[in-house]
Image 1 (cartoon, rainbow, N blue to C red):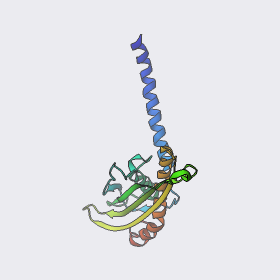
Image 2: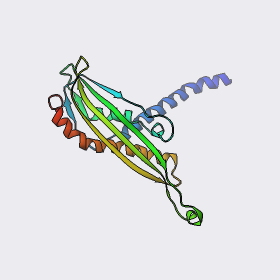
Image 3: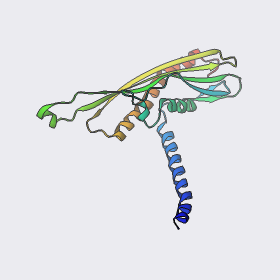
Length: 196
């Protein structure tokens, strides 16, 4: 009897897990939409994402607790901005040179005044550095451009983990949006033979 119930419930549980995972992927995709929708026609047949250094999973680094990583955001950003023509044997390589969020705890108001004061409890700093490069079949960089961005935000006392995750998500997107303003003119000037 127990085995029979378990056998009937197993497919439903598997379906539920798959639906949850699909929902999480769709939520992450929806969250990774950027302000600038510029698309570049790119003379390349493939896209590669390279990460120079992944942030550690220890304090003060909090990137691993965010809803998505800078690496995932870099992939989404590349997919939304570069339309590969397939007309060459080159590779478009996006190198994430830096992508991290760190936390700094802020001092709290003490004494009786502290009972009536809602302080900013933590400051978060996001740093992003990306290189866009066209790589020939021999692995040689034939054109490249790079961009950087950083941002800081604070959260108030009592911020939940979900509140913080929302802030980190916004920070990741904002750093990519800010980097776009610096990077796109460089792409147009230094990579114009391959990226149009």
